[in-house]
Image (tube, rainbow, N blue to C red; front, side):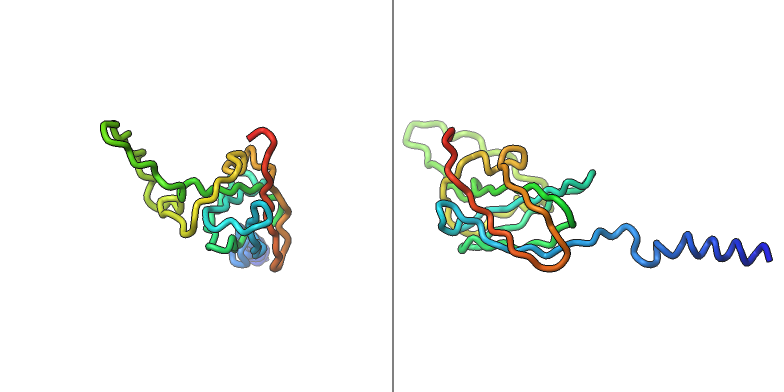
Length: 154
């Protein structure tokens, strides 16, 4: 009967792998990014989970400020960045054109210019560390509008 116990033990150890142990459940989150009460017409939203070793999730905004993402459950910190949409200054005659920055690595969602129009927002929102934006992701579908406000120290 010793073989039967070993088989059952092996099955118990193998079962969580078959059932999907290691997959992180998530919640579908959508909403709008608003600045001064109006939709931010383009850019990226970055979500960083509080889970250790989690990669950031980056999604683009449409021209009405809408975003949609499936995120891991729990606390997420958020950043909003639209600097890629900022028009490049054309050098005036006689000025030396600065060297272009190297392109982002292949596969990076930021390698593609987002759709939309540039609207200056406070620079604090461009970084997860300084934005002050966060919320808790719960199972199911939820809406989280992100309201950006002018900071006094801009």
